[in-house]
Image (cartoon, rainbow, N blue to C red):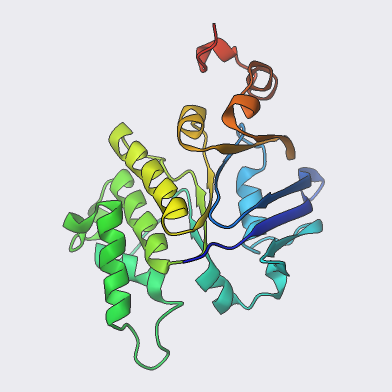
Length: 250
């Protein structure tokens, strides 16, 4: 699989009179793995909604392989871009394997439905995420962390060229946080998927990503390697905390 290039150009977004994003620009090359960080209210989730064309920006554009997302048919976009939201609610009985299989809908034959290749993709996704043992369980009976892993497996089964994640480690214990971070790196390096993950945990971001995007009050405050983006000044100015509390700074 070859990842897709993702370009965000001069993006601006307002909610009424409140400025949410302003002049945000960056490019992700195919197969890149990048973490999007910043304090609460910085505009991270809003940026993801613009990228997925769920929200129309005030100005600017989002392009996938030089084509505006607004010009991509929804079915084609679903084959190109997968999203893992921060929280997922399942209101009716559904087994884990059934929820993961929803990721194959963009690929299923319109008459034949799920085929052998779709079932293989579901099995592979559950194995890579480490939830094969949960396949027959009712999703509603799972812990919040287990449910988050199931949603991640659904996105992996989708086999999209771009993967967007909004707090993928929320509700996960330390072991599963590390496993998810390693999976994201593997999806980028081995499968060529372009990964953009919103993270609040700057320690995880620094440890597992070679490039960070730092949003502050809707603007891109820094873009580069962790050593540059997570400088003492940036942590102090953007997060408003003593950097010695969160970084290994003498």
